[in-house]
Amino acid sequence: MPLDTLAAPATHALEIKHSRFVAHAAPIENEDGAMRVLRDVHVPDATHNCWAWRVGDQYRSSDDGEPAGTAGRPILAAIDGQGFDRIAVVVVRWYGGIKLGAGGLVRAYGGCAAECLRTAARQPLVDLARVVLRAPFDALGSVHAALPGAQAHKLSETFDADGVVLHIELPRDHVPDLKIRLRDATRDRVEFAPAADDAP
Image (cartoon, rainbow, N blue to C red; front, side, top):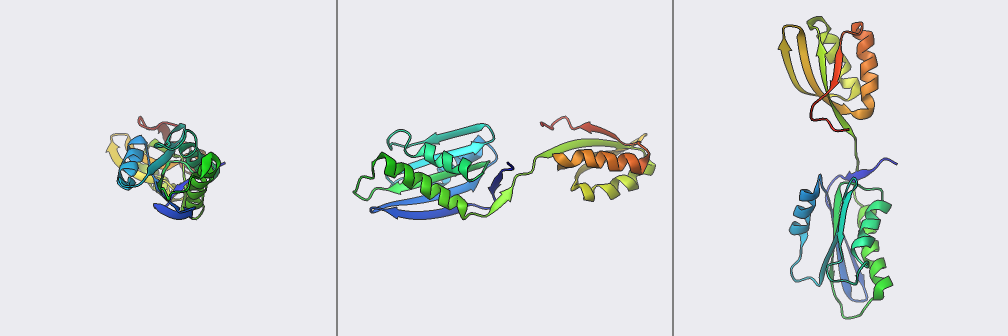
């Protein structure tokens, strides 16, 4: 199933038995980004700042003093259940004097995070590939004409004695189509190679 990230940070507030819960969700690129979000939304005078984040196969969560498994894991389950990746969610709790019990905490933390994500603006994650194209000078027009249809973005363009070297970025699933188009348009005179920094 294709995953989404957040188009913008989102928040959602909930009150249960006088305890106030506020979820803060934000898009991230990596663990450093997650740590920045955790620092930015941390509320020192709150009872608990519980959180979870996921970036692909990497994830972490924290109950921040709540009983084990009642906060961080339900927040992570909300991230996964809503089909998100590359996001961090912090749920801040101010204790209202009435204990919720383990089941109540799981529902409160997971529910607040899930509702925050359910109502947030989504942005599809697109797996991008970086490719190096080599083409003779007389094929340059065909190459430039084919790039927009493949949603390719030109990163750099240099010339040498044999022609042009283009570094481009495009959705990974558009690469085969672009190869076919350029093969047909240039009588197979464009060379493709993955860029050195492209990691599938």
